[in-house]
Image 1 (cartoon, rainbow, N blue to C red):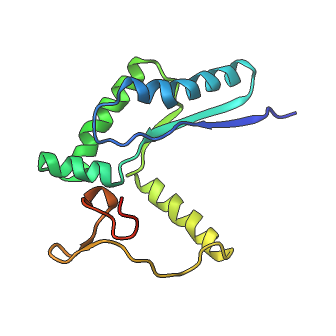
Image 2: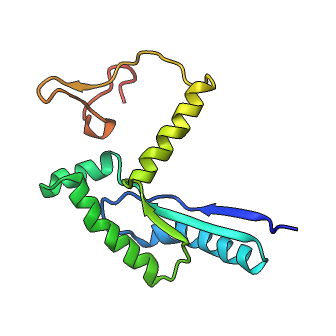
Length: 150
């Protein structure tokens, strides 16, 4: 008889700053407690976490410091890892979303989703900066929304 398997993950914090206590008690610690409990119960358990190195939060922080998002993430990843190690969080794998395996896996998942017809094509309107020739995430937008006046 094989042991029941359990995969446990926690939220992936952005690597745009030093993690705070809320990061630990809000996601890492509860997942760690559950992973430890499952191991004690004899379940074949793997606990996976890491840092999210994509998104506007990291891009804005990198711009603030005048460095690339990759340089920012390289710097903060080590700090995140050291802090979770100091708290003795029992990760079996603490990774980074910038690793090639994550790109490959994501592409495989999206290809399967597309193949099964769960993706539809449509057009949407997004804020665009004509000066810098790029789409702008909502964190870059200031002012009143022309649709809802928010």
